[in-house]
Image 1 (cartoon, one colour):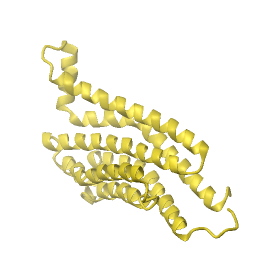
Image 2: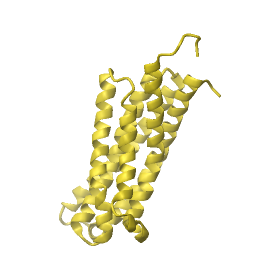
Image 3: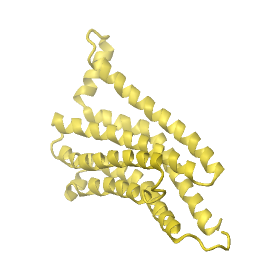
Image 4: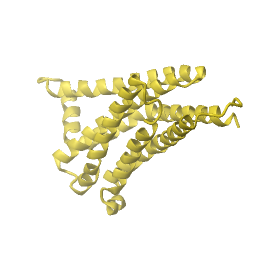
Length: 229
């Protein structure tokens, strides 16, 4: 760092940015594990709706913290606000995970859980857009290049996954399909939670790459403030 005294307001916003990125980094895997286990594991039910509310709230809190950075940048604010809106939807739908575990064969509750999973994919998609905007504002060319690369791959994978879901919904509305396709669609229709776990499996790669990108961004910010050590 140069000898000139740093801007206290900038340091404050960078500190909140680092804390927000840390909350997102730890919140993503925790949200995946806790939300899935709330549906599956009996011992999680002792905590009622609290665990999924905490982890989805942690993701919203992380976005709220990083919102203190570069408030004057309108494209950054619009991208961040869109991600916060999806995070808020996830927070509101998360109690349905517990209620589905209590009434596992209720079609309405299972359908809401599937909607929550789709909203989770949209959150991951919007989070990559946030990281792309953030990387463009940070003075590190290597980070900008890696951010463009990883977010492009992640968004392509997530869009392909959403396209597969759209194809499934389209096939479900078409009559006179081959018997094998009909059997698969019927089985998925009778087991909405199977769709949930298939989507989770397919989303693991973009989730891992998003976490790696969050960690890299946080490290670049820390090195720019405190030096490489």
